[in-house]
Amino acid sequence: MLARFFCLSRVVPLRKVRHLTYLLLALTGAASLTDMADATTVQSYRVSGNSVFEEWYQPDDCGYFDTQVTAVSQPSGNFNYATVNVSIINWCTNTYNYWYGSTSTDYLLTVQGASGATLTATIPVQIYATGIQSNGTVILNLSWSATSRPEVSQMLEHTNSPAGNTILRTSGNSSLATATGTITSNGSSLLPTNPLTQVGWFGTNMQGQLTVTHP
Image 1 (tube, rainbow, N blue to C red):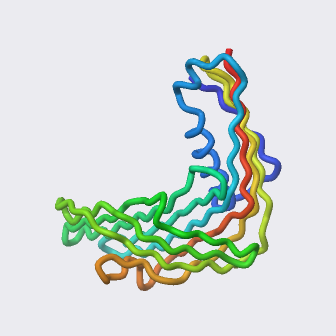
Image 2 (cartoon, rainbow, N blue to C red):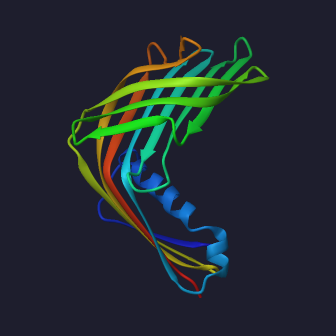
């Protein structure tokens, strides 16, 4: 069983450090389980880049309409992707519709310093319409505008296990932001018209290092 210890340089809301979570995914993806099992040396992995996130959530008496977009871009790395997840649920009519997919190539994420970001993407998706599965495409054309000053987030995490010991260091600048634009599939909008909540941010200058020491 893993023993995990966390040390944050400052207490920040989860929405402010989600971009650090994507660094964690990138770094742990680089350190494969085979490496963990077989290597006998100290290994180090590094990533850097930018990210964006936005969620629109619109509930009603019969269900909800939820749309989420995430993108991560490393200028000199291979952990790059844009994802979209859409759920439209209506319990009153017993209908369930989902769109979800990702791309690692057909997208462009641009972060303009501390002021905002833009994302254009064409994402192949799986579509589930009340039990019927099909394939489709979702087109994103979004712009983020900062609604807060950028803050620096830092995290230090130690993990101990029989396979080895790890030290994860991450840092980055993040700003709360609001995204506007379009998300469409087959010409139809996949954005709630009157969301109850809309939460977003963009992260810049993300840096992460994972050091693995094997027994």
